[in-house]
Image 1: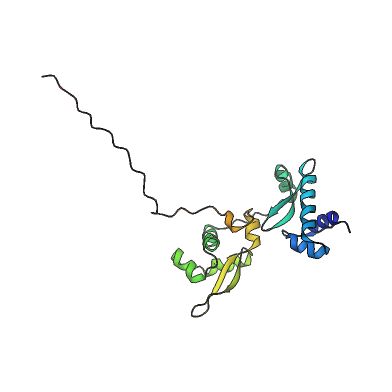
Image 2: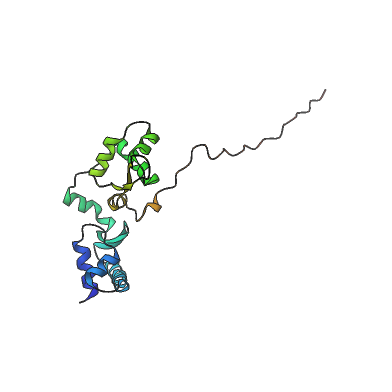
Length: 185
């Protein structure tokens, strides 16, 4: 079997980013051969093609090139799914503090977040990642590969750094020397 053609076919049919290990397992070849094929395909698609191989959400995927985004959007006419301010707020808390419980989310927000958590679960942006070793064993939530894909990240380490409020003191302002005018008497 030609590994290059196999990798290309698997990426074509995959509806989510594929990890090299999964591609190697499906093709029954060593991972290094898949990685070589991914590099070769990436080079081939770099010039003269409308598609590209992108690394996203911990895997690889075939994607249209950014300069064709407007044409693809007009052709597909996708329904835009915007997240409300509340959902974005809860999602940000989960992303930065994962794994996190609903009670911990509520403590940050100051209001109940059950509905928002259910909505984010439904949209597959977060998932139940386990149970906390605490009384009641509350459910822990973490972000999904779908979250990474939706926000064009390869891992949560790519999240912007948060500025800690009050952690940084304003820089000292330079003081100007006092000007004393001499008056002729």
